[in-house]
Image (cartoon, rainbow, N blue to C red; front, side):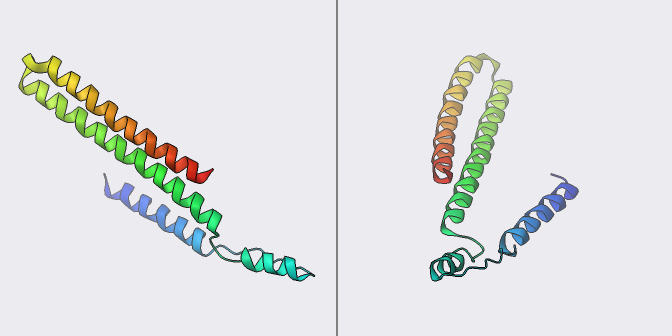
Length: 119
């Protein structure tokens, strides 16, 4: 990863944090006490529902990134092993496909759990 890409990614993360924590909450003018209590409850920067959705979305995204990294490492190791011992290519490919399917299954389960938290 280049330094330029790292700086852009860090800037985007910081901008997202600034927008998330320092966003202005709308001013609500209410006449009765029930509406004032409701407005006071929603005045925070992150409600319980919002935290649940944010956590689920972040969890689903991280699980996809982890699964992709795991499958990439398995594929790279399998290609390297086949290059060292071409006669064992069939056994290595079979083991690689089974391992990648296990990683993909766990990743899919994590994404579904994260998305259920969002919904």
